[in-house]
Image (cartoon, rainbow, N blue to C red; front, top):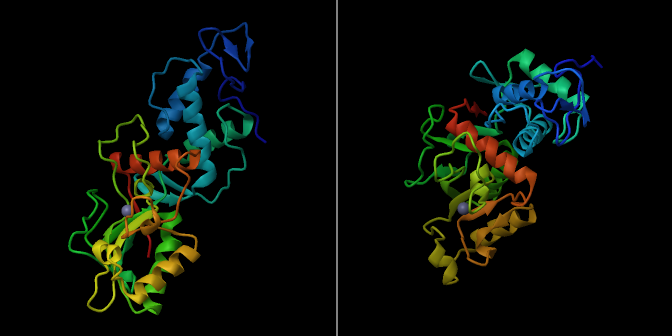
Length: 289
Ligand SMILES: [Zn+2]
């Protein structure tokens, strides 16, 4: 491993502070702006939006944890305003403290001009034989998103393909009303988790009508027990595949299907943050064919 000198060669733990000359948990004799340098780097990488104050406090620690999560979980980066795939695998751990592996990873990103982004992708409805966009489907308002495109998390792509294939097997069409949803209040640099942690906000859900011949299998059809047999079979196949159907929720939401990420987890919070930020930052979104 290359020797790390980027931050004076120090690791950082809670309580470290440039003003106290405290790094890696101990008072040092010579002065330095080591924590401030890390804050500047994390701001550039896109996970830190606080003051550059040289204090290794909760904001900086969370920002470092976000970065380590992104490096571990995603291979998409933004470089020079385009999406690139990072082939290097970060083998460090999810961490709020600075360690040599994380330090090396930060240096590597900065050398490559990488910025953090989410795992949103664009797919074209036309590429799915049994998926159509309903008249109410709203194209996501973002410079990268074109008419006829659906925005989802890469982590939901397999689910969407499964839904499409299953619809084909059962000779139904799925009319999509919604996929990824931008969080209501404009997302600023500071990431505030939403009040309702919907799977739509991370790109892991769709709302659709299961159109079976002349029947749209609407919410009232389900309420009145008038759904068609193929609709029931479609739902069975989806739930057996590990997806949730909104019709089983305590407040039934029959058009809804999702691949649940636990809303009380880092995975949800960080996926939410990066995917929403990629919209507010106008980052490019990969078109997946
Ligand atoms: Zn929904």
